[in-house]
Image (cartoon, rainbow, N blue to C red; front, top):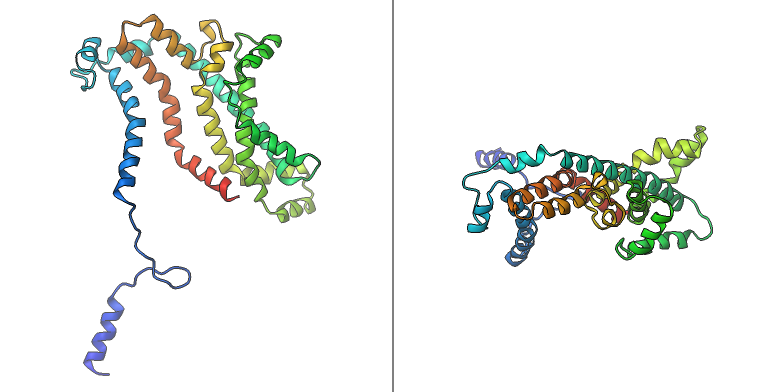
Length: 300
């Protein structure tokens, strides 16, 4: 073998090969979108993030700073507004009410929605399509439309000024979205798994607990996160149902606090920041879970 041939073999072996796909084709470099698309996306992001940043930073300012230069950074930074809110017994009472309502509504929605979705996805019966269409139609009727008849029903049940008067309707109005998301996950479970579980002696309940719930966990996490955030931010229903401040949730607490301290804008902004912070952190931490769950629902 000549020296030239040897050098060509060594150089070709040393050169890294471009990655190839499953069929042996070289992967094409990723193409970036048009600058206009990114510009529009940045505008939407700025429109969503700017008010949140303004509220959070406003809590670190004094009223004179806000009046003199509303768009400036805190100079100096004032921590007394947040400290005063955190020392407030009212804030922590409303925080506890929001936690109870959000957790109870989320757990109830997930459990009932998973059961209903399992029946719709795995079994054939009369009016199955009508039942699924009924839940799908529930997405088109927001809570605000039904608030007056809902108030009458809650009043007849004796649940006015009671946290259960908020929890039960939130579970009912959270079921349509839960069913729509979970049904594709449960349909995607192979029938062979259910048959194998039946051969091994597992009951339908055992198959549901041991197989269905773990396999549909991405969808369960997704509906749980969305249900928690929606319940935490719900304002209209607690406004109609809850009367005493001892039962207020944080959205109502923000309204009451801003009415009580209407002249103290900085402290109102601090209270608002702390009220929205749990839902904001919760949603940010589990953002990928939400996207993954919704993607799986679409694929299913």
